[in-house]
Length: 328
Image (cartoon, rainbow, N blue to C red; front, side, top):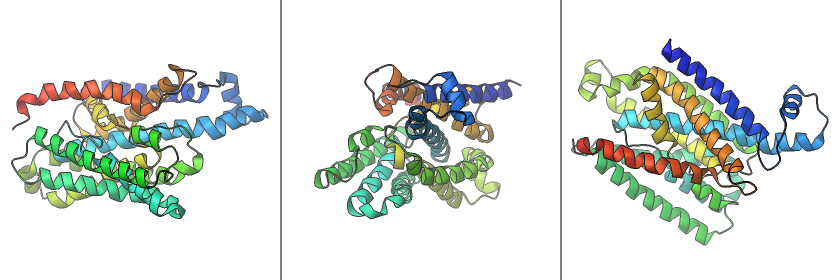
């Protein structure tokens, strides 16, 4: 009953935040305007333009990015058995970001391939980390430090691309911190397909993640090919994170914060945790985006800055919490 209430409550909050996100901004839309737009009973061209071209893509982008990054974080933490890991901490996001900027600079006619390029960039970073993690004798803190080093390398690559090709990506400054301004429905169509497929595959992988979380020896005793399953799950996490980065930029800390919140509310069972994290992650990013538009009005702060202000202290809290076991 408690878990069902939490899930239902999360969905209600998701709908509320989405409705507020559609209504509030530099030009607010009243509840009547939103109702008329949703029912198709308005002929106000200004309202239609704001709703279709600005608000709807932005809110949908926030929901997609939040769900994808949160579920990606759940998978990474379970596969690596590291509660400090997340797509932005271990370099997955920056790997995807480097691939996006490289394709934008070198192949400007192939921008429709950005989600696919982001996937391969994210996968490359994730495989490097997984190779380090499976080397034996690697502590949680060491893995995080290795991820920070990889992030630094990929960030240097992104800066190099932008220096050589300064016009390669419109809004590169917002991309580097994570932002949702300027999104269109066309830009999120392809990532939506990737994320939808990734979420479905993730939800049906909950049992496998539970088995992996029991330890490699136990998983092998239960007949699982651990190395193959880890690779497939890491590839799935890269697919989700890469698709989100391809349109939302380097949003950080969603995949770190949300899984911990989900475990606190629902427990460690990934069969419940994964779908719950998708909803909570969507709420988190949409709410942060709403705050970045409303709190600093008439100015607009990229949502990535707002999330970093929350995620940074949370990351420090986790390091302090797990420092005693970081060398186990």
